[in-house]
Length: 451
Image (cartoon, rainbow, N blue to C red; front, side, top):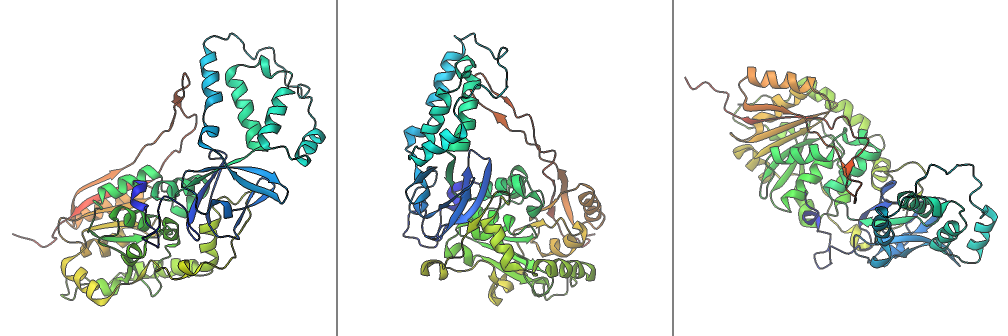
């Protein structure tokens, strides 16, 4: 899941490390307090706090650049921050003084009288053109208790005021890890509560490599499909099967900024078309077709509105974007991912089978899907089934064993805990996610008796 795998865009002559007009970006506001996706155009705007800022200054900047909200004569805007200005000089200075100082916070009383600078004074500074950093320094200078605080408390106070009066925006490149983390943090239900470590393990157990033909039954808005295509790097094929006449939505794939060549490798086909002509496999079960049809009806109610939400609005609180701007001609000519598979490609899949299978459909019964899709694999090919809960996978595992369809069956539960790594303050985070879902993996075998 390396970010280098997604260093592709619609124009091969462009530098993929620099943003361009029409590309998708991930905006990290105030060190992860808010994360949102946006499509960069000259007329795009984003609301940060109570200020609407244009995203035009972000076009042509390298991914990883930092910006700070400033107020000019024409209103608020995003000003770039020099690399040396966003370092940890204050933090490092505080860390050096930590061992020497003996101050503590026992004598401090939080009675709202320590700050002599009033709201009217701050408004006056803003009208005179003071920057956010100047306001923060003024607040520190007019605090009666700042010098009495410990170095750690001083740094917390400084960061708190900086986030309020001089919010910063980090321009991140969307790839599998950053997209999954952003969705899991704000709208985990949209991706079936799939955590990033579970996604990584899923791709590894499925043996997703270059030049593979991967069958992906993705009902998580396309997060799995995009991750598979990113890892394959524009080689092989990703096939999204569907039961009815409407393909499953993969709107998240738009955020990966894939090249036209990679988008051509993401195809869809109905399960009826994928069935071999030798009569070995029966048609999809009626129950699976009915369940898929119900899901498709829900997904197609407002597909265009859903795409806009998925693309532009990860954080729905305090969020206001205006991206109803005509896309550039270059963006309009890009190839759309998820086109129908050509007959010759389907014929090849039917004759040789797929090299791996991934099922991510928490809203459907795992066994109903697996019994129709596992036989489409070539022999000795791996498969992985994701589900938010354990019991559906346990039932599916038992049925696969009973029908002698697979070996090496195992259910995995990834475990993840993040750590804060700072000088003299390295420790696990106080909170962590309870579960990132479960994975059932195995290897397909021939079910015919050889005796």
